[in-house]
Length: 62
Image (cartoon, rainbow, N blue to C red; front, side, top):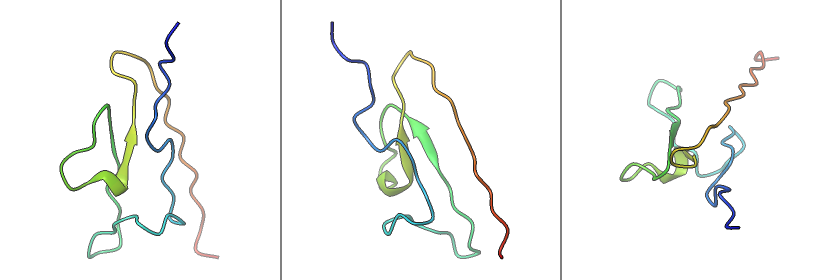
């Protein structure tokens, strides 16, 4: 049986050096089977036709 696991990045974090931030400090994260053109550093791969779960961890500035 073939693995249906994603092969791309499974998480994005402020600790990822290649993460692209917007001018106001916010970050856009993209989810999908393929990265949008020019947005691969902020992309999390999903399994086409499959399910996925999103987990956010938010921390205060201190």
